[in-house]
Image (cartoon, rainbow, N blue to C red):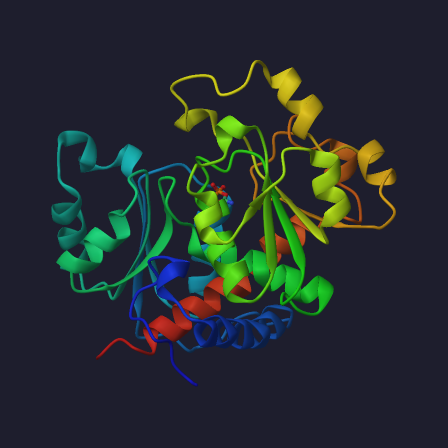
Length: 309
Ligand code: CP
């Protein structure tokens, strides 16, 4: 297969296994490119991409921009905080105004779940979801699986536990879809109040004891508690959350094997993960960030090749 089955990347649930394998093979090529002295290819010289961020981001925004520039695309950046959205302009009006400047692709982060799907039905451009509320974060899940594949050889049959605030996490949902599609076993671990009731319908099991979850897994993906999405308190205190669900060097040393530690960032050091774990050789957190550029180059390149020009 040499092209994606989709014209937009709106969520992992719209992809199939062939799509994921094609993205990874293409990312392998781009990873080699970005390790060369000249880290750029001319592939997308005729493409213009708008990065629309209606919500804060460090990694995803910079990673997309770098990926686009490494492919020689023209890039424009839009941040809602300094835009006419503040004057009441709608999403469709904002995007159509940007598209009238001959933009081919839109990378969008938005606080509302389904914003990318909505946009894809109303505007003439390829849409890439860079995170939509608590719904999906497909490129994060792709770079996470790509990093597991790089560290452990393959994702199939690996045991992955996702620890933390599953309820509010688009990273958790996209990871579950991606990992299950590739044949991994997935558990979630966290306070019962932060685990959605439908989770078992996704083919995932629940473990509320962190030590047992870590004893079971090959990889632990540690998530941040998303206080910004909470209107009420879901656990008694941060201290108690850390005591039960924070990964420490001590707990890792008590296991009879060395597991891989992941985190999508941003990290809350001393809450879900201690600094000595985050900075250890068991953690592949910065590898994830580095792989994000190659994976996003692959996604953009493959979607751009489907744009009719
Ligand atoms: N992992 C992630 O999405 O980080 P940012 O919010 O900084 O983009």
